[in-house]
Length: 201
Image (tube, rainbow, N blue to C red; front, top):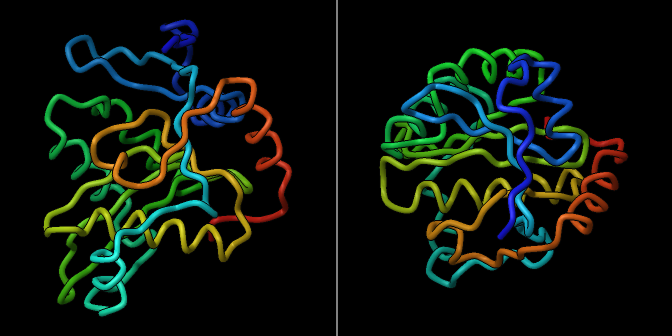
């Protein structure tokens, strides 16, 4: 896999971050140095909304309705859980206030799963028009992050969104139907999604 990387000293502001997503780039922090690096992997991992695969056991669990889905009720908490529970992570302290401001501006969102009125897991990402750029997910109870991903796909379908970008394939999402596509194909899908008159909320 080749990875395009932009200048490491690029300004880390809300405006620059949104512009980067619109051009196929996303940031990852380096835990040791604290610097932010920008990536545009080729190939790119995406989850096709129409081809999303849910196992029979997970489907049964979702139908039981033992969970509650909430949107944007504790964005920073979700982000910090993702940062804490993933150990040596690409989410650094420097990134928290920028994404929190993006959340306040209506571009960054969290989807939380509650069980028995207690936060059980969730995910967060950035959404622009018909694209959702998934950043990270976590779980405090079994299957909660899997349920969060399923609920994200269902919400995106209902809103008429078109692109769920997962950046890379990791073991957690590999169990779902994830595609890797070349950069030029990703950019075509991205531009199409950004032109849609829809939104996540």
